[in-house]
Length: 435
Image (cartoon, rainbow, N blue to C red):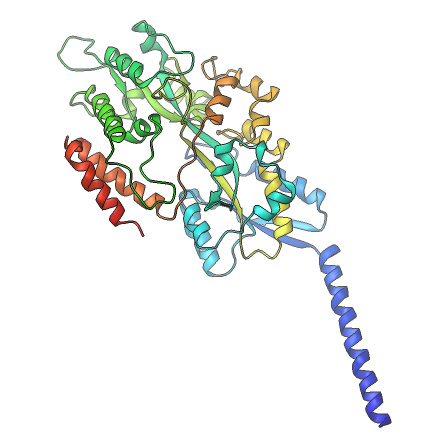
């Protein structure tokens, strides 16, 4: 009996000792041991323009975060190109080694959110983030099926870039905001001409303006919000695509390219803010557009008011498998929601901040008035208006693939001048492809 009691006491002591060691180890890991969070990023710009900054902003942000969290180390794999990044991230996920925080690959957000790869951020947001600090379209870019799976990092709205010299030559003034579609078509008619009298057009109105821009200008969408129904075979859609066909016809049989715009032969070309900022600055300005004066305004709309802006937004997410979600969230907020980080982003990068406070700040006003922008056509007030009026793209699993199919079918139909008879069959094909 005494032997059994001693054995029982020894067992209890051993269990108690192990428990203390376990608790001690947990305390050590939590408060004293160096914790590592992994970041997934690609090199260079999100917007496919030259960038000399690489990961400077990320390195600066990491240094600030590690200073605030002495027992945390933030690491990332450098040198991954944007083209290779999606495959790299996919491989990491297959191996169970996905980063804690990562840039969401372009066009992959809907798929990753729908398959459970991204952590639901709503509990974090409701606890300590005021989502009103963001432009609404920026924040909604990270929403899927009414849940928040990512935070925005950088905006890149589409603008209408203008050869100012051609407009001045024709006596055409820039509008206060933008042109209505009716006004824009009349201006394009005036600009499309044969200037040397050889019977061939040699001055053109537009290049790169697509049917998607025409549809967006009308405030239309090809699909309903859930992605269960196509919305092509309607009178409004026919009107938008018919208007676009008329605009294309102004170029005659000549296939206008972006190099024609570079040579000063085209008046209008849609261009993202990142492209505009890149090619307004030295040395890219000298190599690309030094032979004529150019500027940018908001894209034309049905009403002539600045609205329905198209905009890309780069996103940051937390892995649903992360074991360090609290640290990951703290770092994510520092990148996305911090005024200092986002102000530096606007100064160093080519796009726009996702925070209204940054885009309306005095520092931003001074930058927009600098030689990099060259004129007042795209001032702070107008750029802020474009960002505030942006429309997020639809969020359902098949959106990207369905848009690619729609682009192929509609472009072919416009080329063959058979839109009137094709829209019903195109709608059926798209709905047949839906889940």
